[in-house]
Length: 145
Image (cartoon, rainbow, N blue to C red; front, side, top):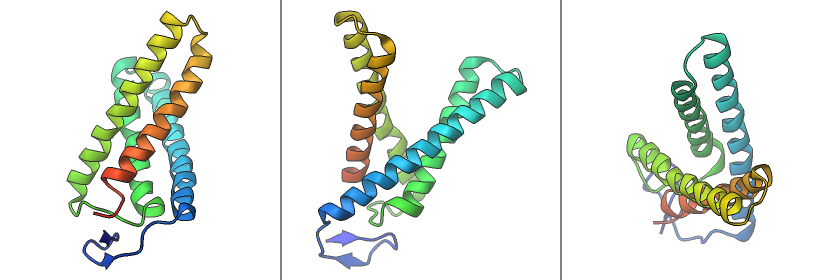
């Protein structure tokens, strides 16, 4: 049984390839919005406020993460497994660590073992991380129970 965003209304309809494709495209769009927020907040905190890069990076990342989460639950994913938003957000953020670890692995292998340019390696890592995050979040948080 699937549970929609109203938490608890059962649905036995399996997701179609088209609905998953729509969610994928929507998640891509909200991820771009989150990246834009991350970059803007980072610029403001470092250049405008003079805050240290490390602290600014964490704050900017969290702002971008919040945008991706809020837009994901509002506009992208119709089905939700977790009824408590705080637990859902925490899980959403923790699943993002898988994407970060994959990025680190690809960057390490690409630049250190394969001696590829870091910019090209980063493009591949970003794509792999995006797909990993979408798949994990879809399976764990935004699919039928």
